[in-house]
Image 1 (cartoon, rainbow, N blue to C red):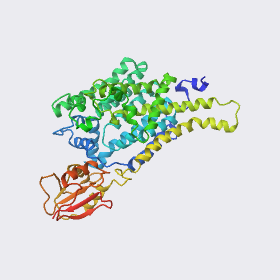
Image 2 (cartoon, helix red, strand yellow):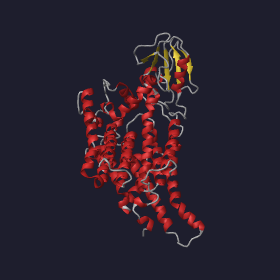
Image 3 (cartoon, helix red, strand yellow):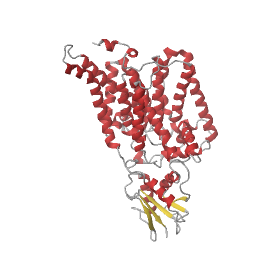
Image 4 (cartoon, rainbow, N blue to C red):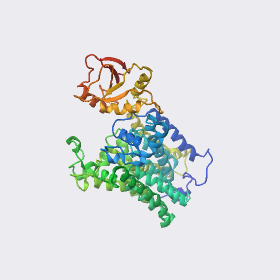
Length: 529
């Protein structure tokens, strides 16, 4: 049986978000502000080394925007204008620098944290919102991408924020005015410009809003989406000669050639493998069992409390069905997506984390309500803290297990991944007349960032040249940089590239002398003689 408190509509519960403007001391403002500040400190300490792969493809495309990046081998990346445009705007202030690389992903992560908190608060309580927000951003795959220039966390953040706004409009916490709906449409449209597969979960928004705003309100919601879609089409046409360049690149991305080792991970599998991609992929991470538990609890919540969990279960289903179909169920020989890449599943992380923690919270309240009415002070205190204690235990176990895995990773600032920053400082202070710096191609991509200061401005002026096996060789006086050639803990691509150029293991050629090295030996600089 439900207690009187449980029978109250969610809007009338005292632990729901109030609808009136709040003073600065209101917990509804202090809690998300505190969460954001704490997590910003964690992110700044764990800024990851800019990896010379997709991440730098986006940075280079943003630096060229609005000119095309030609030749563009990864068209789906250079046409994700929702990511490129804000990065380009940051570059107008900080240039091609570390700051320009980090600002957008860090802000996107904070939006994801606050959006998840807002949703959890609206659906369950502020405790669930705060715990859910921290678990989502602390989850290993999300955290690893939190400071990388990639689209998935940002797209998830924009949609989560949009869903929180839509739910607040439905609950009459926000006005259903024209400008609110236009702003909501801009959030949705921009999330598509960042990452196209986010559209699969869009139907939640009109379903939530229709009874409140009607068809006319949905028209105002759709107007900015249509304008942004038109803008994308014109940009693709103008930059790459095809108005459907992005759509074609995305739909055919996984059907091109893949090395047999990679192709074997996502092609010609039993259909059951594709159906279970999400839970099986979660299992690979340190906190995987806890995330699987939260996913299972969300589905259980949909069975025992269908009205309370309908939004979250529908959220999971709207992504799981199309991704599973495209990822191999329809045609195992030609999947359109590589679903073993966990970033495809980021849009449902807030859904199943909040669902699982929400069920733990409700179970704790139910058990507390079943305690004898005539009870001692100790029992009353236990009943009061039981829901919070159960919630904190599960969330702390999940986030704590994840944090033990990624805390102070070698590729982060706190883990010592600042070797190229140290090289930049050395170069700015030791001008020995060298005109050219040689490195393998991945390292050269990163040196394009580290030749500038962290906030912009040129730090050193030497020319960069890519060393190739059997190609042109350094001349006397040139500098040759070996980066992470021994262990590859910071940049595995750089280690592989160096071995292709300088043999295995990479060694300096006769006549070279070492002129600089970091204490850990990750960076070693030689002067060719």
